[in-house]
Amino acid sequence: MGISLSKGGRIDLSKEAPSLTNIGFGLGWDTNDSDTGVDFDLDASVFMLESTGKIPADNYFIFYNNLNSPEGAIAHQGDNRTGEGDGDDESLFVKLSKIDSRIEELVFVVTIDEAHQRNQNFGQVRNAFIRMYDLDSNKEIAKYDLEEDFSSETAIEFGRLYKKSGSWRFKAVGAGFNAGLQGFVDKFIG
Image (cartoon, rainbow, N blue to C red):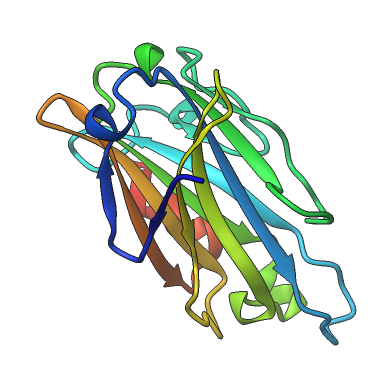
């Protein structure tokens, strides 16, 4: 069991896992029974940001339609359209040594596909988490369980992996937004 993070909590990977080179990020959730009449489809995405707070090119936005970053540093393991079962619902693999030197931050988000059309929000989602683990040993490094009730939000920024003073650090964010995936696209692209 790794470090349990609270909202705003941070860890320095050079101290907590100094030999770490390949990281797995598992994101998970369960949905409540709802009367929307439509299944939930939650999607994990990553935005690879430069120091400007923007992605350098469109292919640095990793999601279900672009599963790999151009330099091979991030590999999205595919879209889980149901969230069925225990454990990670969607996973992303990160190779630290391959991250483009321009990239300062990776922003991990989860959004509900067609949330407004389906009358769905994160208030209908429970047991949401992001966990970070060593891909080579499968040892969990840290986990952040979202405990807030996001009763109207359709998108959540789960966490950020960022560079500071030459080392990678992770911050548990847990911020909700109402603009879905498009809100993040508008913020980080262009």
